[in-house]
Each structure stands twice: as C-alpha cells, then as structure tokens.
Length: 336
Ligand SMILES: [Zn+2]
Ligand SMILES: [Zn+2]
Image 1 (cartoon, rainbow, N blue to C red):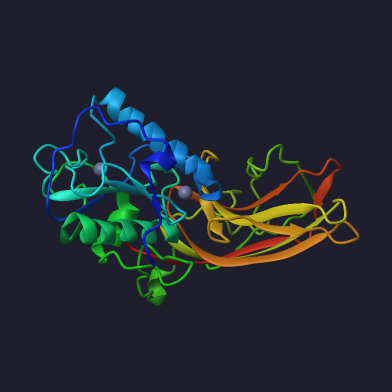
Image 2 (image 1 turned 90 degrees about the horizontal axis):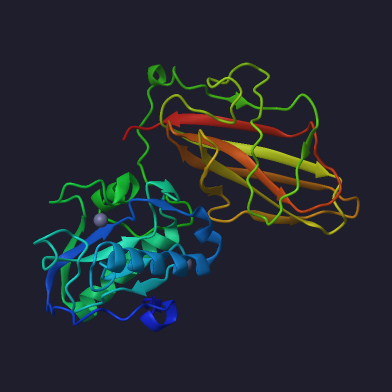
C-alpha cells in the first residue's frame, strides 16, 4: 500500500523560517511520541489529528524557537502520514548531534490520554519509514528517541514494539506486550473471574455530545474484586479477557447508542477505547426501544488502568441499564 501522505498544504503547515539543511542519507529513523497528553478523541476524528500536528509545529517554532516542526513526518491513528520537514532535510527532534544520523517520525501518542498506538498508527509509522527510505535515503535502522539520548520518548508501548522489530500489525488487535506463559502457581494474585453483575437497575445519563464517558463504577457484589468496587482494577499488569452483556431500555425506536470496552486511569480520565478497537460500536434500539449487545475482547490493563463498559446515548427519556447486565474478566498476568 502506498503511503497516504497529508501534505503540508493539506494540514495547514506554517512556512519554515529559513531554509532546511540538506541531508542525502541517514542510518535510519528514530520514532517519537509527543511526551504530553494526546486527546484520545483523535481516534474518532481525523480533524483532531490535524489540529494536534499544527499545535506541535507551533510549540516547536514559537516555544523552542525552531525553524519548523522538529519531525520529518508524523503518523496518526488513520494510517495517514503528515509531511513534517520531509525527506532530504535535517530534522531537529533527535537531540543535538543526533539529527543527521536518523530521520524523526512521530507517532501521535503521549504519556497520558492516548498512550497505546492503534494499529493504523503503527502502519502509518512504517509507511513513513518506507517513504523516507525510498525518497530520502534512510537506512535500515529503526530506533527510539531514547536510544542514545536521555528521554522517556517514545514511551513504553512504542519502544517495546520497536524492540520487537517494529512488525506490521497483522490484524485489528495489536498485543503490544507479549504474553508470558503462565504457570499455575503464578496465577494466585490475579482473580480469574471478576464478576461485576448489578444488583439493581441503573439509569444511564444521556451524553451531551457523544463524548462523555460512563463514569459509574460497577460494584463487585460477589466481593472478588481487588479494588473494592472499581470496574476492573488489576493489582498486577494483566491481559483481561472481557465479556460484557449490555441491555438497555427506554430508548426511542431506532435511536443510536454507542457502546464499547474502554480503559481509564484511576482518576477517571480515558486512556482509549479497547474494543471495538478504536471505535465505539453503534447499535440501534428495536421497536420496543431496547438494545441488547454482547461485547467481547482482550485488552491490556496495567496497574494504572481501569477497565469499563462505556455507554453513550442522547435520549431525552430515562434510559435504564437492566439487571441482566454482566461484566466478567479472566485475567492473565504479563511481564514487561
Ligand atoms: Zn522524541
Ligand atoms: Zn488522523
């Protein structure tokens, strides 16, 4: 597949202040993340990717005093490659003395908000690398910013992916940390099944603009939950196999509802949408104003994360989540 470039004109780049230093080849490419918070809503809205890249350029030009955005290129969740300084031009993002050795490609993830690169972004980073090889003389190396420079960049998820050889995602679900084989005696600290069934019906508040997240913590009435009533709160890093049955009533016939399995930080701020990958599933109420949907998938929960079911609707009437709802997780520990 050819690289899907977003030209500087298309993303509304400012003109560089001055002329680029030319380079004709590099040993390879270094991968970066933003280091700050990336709005997880970029996953659903490419216009937010454009806004994010523009603000990075302004930060680099006005804050750092650079002549342009520091990166050679940037990749967003939609497998699009933003042209930064581009091939044949010295980048500025790798650190003093390290820019002639490698081009710099940004993945639009950070250390908060969107932290796990979606499959489309990994494809985009690889598309950018192939493009820089083809037209910019980039060599075969793929490294992280932290290789040779003291920084957390490109963050644990991208860096582990690089260390695994930066493989193309094979399917929609991208395990970023390999599963460790589990011995029976290692399973002890992790509850095998977390039951979060409800004892009473719960009214689901309407979402104003599709954006708010479901904020209620689901009680663990069986008392198996390690976090004392949080949605899913692992006490070690785990892969969670999650199945959730959502049954809602009180909607208008045909009215849309969006549901998904999501990850949050303990303070309630969203990490990302874990299933369906990168998007909430849209389902429509039947003639009786009901919706029933089964969600299932596997996602990674670190100590920092809480797994939840997110439900969004815009109904004006009371929408009720029925007692039949359930949420189970079988967890496997993984090691970093
Ligand atoms: Zn970096
Ligand atoms: Zn995008």
